[in-house]
Length: 160
Length: 173
Image 1 (cartoon, chains in turn yellow, orange):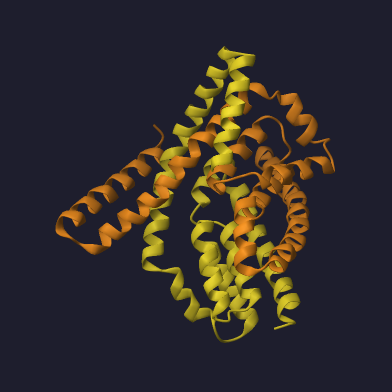
Image 2 (cartoon, rainbow over the protein chains, first blue to last red):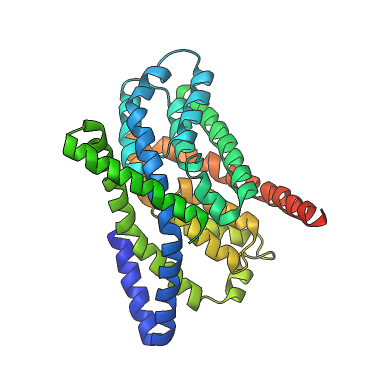
């Protein structure tokens, strides 16, 4: 986060030196875009928080620790698609799952689809690029997540 | 104010009232929810001003022609490469990547490059990668990159075609 604001400061100073008027225009444009996006952020975060409250990620462990490996990868990917968890929560959980013996393929399915597919962020994506774009991109991402996890499962676990 | 924005405010308002009432009544669920909600909002509020400042400056300084040249229809493979490099630096996930992608698109970047940027910004962000590698191992992370990045590029090119055909059909109707 520090890096972000260092970049911002440098960009802002350079911009002011180059053209103060244009800088002000840029700040205004950024502010306007921010105000347009902010309300959706608020409600999507809310949905996320409520969802995580009722379905704590820790519970996923029970579902994924036994049964068929490929099926588990699929389930993990579906769970990952529905919930949106920021990295600072997702990876510690993935670390715990790994320690208790969940396979790499399942972990990959969970983390990759967590990051790439967003059922809960769908409304936001739709707002920016339209329904079709959001729909196709999420479906494609889901397939990519599945393929990636199968490959990781095969390579790192030596097959299912 | 648009309908969607209004709905967002109404939902958030109801939640806040619920949270305050539960705090007064010492009802655990509401308090817990409010606490975690605030954690996320804090994170968003900390990052977004910086992200949107950069978007604003980008909007006034970078010419359309520049984006078209490097990420437009005729940019070839370089456009994808640029999208991935840009994605590496992204923080804040989709919340930041979407407005940035929109800005690039408005300035003439081609659809497949936008799709690659979004896909890559989901999985290639540097801070997240470091975290992942420390939790799940370096070979896990490297393997995930090697498999998923080519897939993202290929699927972006395919999706561009599909989405374009859809749009053309819509116009013909």
